Image (cartoon, rainbow, N blue to C red; front, side, top):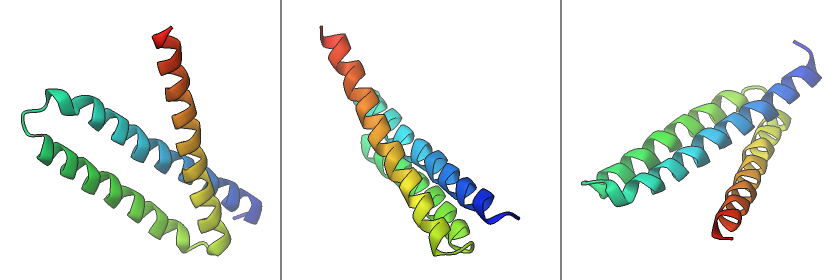
Length: 95
C-alpha cells in the first residue's frame, strides 16, 4: 500500500473516531435531562466511546508513529471543528 495513502487514511480514521467520540458525547449530553438513569447513560456512553477509540488508535499504531500522529491530529481537529460548529449554531439560535 502506498505510504501517502496510508497516512491520509490514518488522518481520515482519526477524523471518523473524533466524530464518533465527540458526536456521541454531544448526543449523550442532550439525552441526560430526560434519562431516568443518567449515571448509567453517562458511564455506558463513556466506556463505549472510549473502547471504540482506543481500539481504533491501537489498530492505527501498527502502521507506525507517523500514522498514529496523523490519526490523533484528525481526532483533535474534528473536536475543534465540532466545537466551533456547535457554538456558532447556539449563537445563531440565541439571536
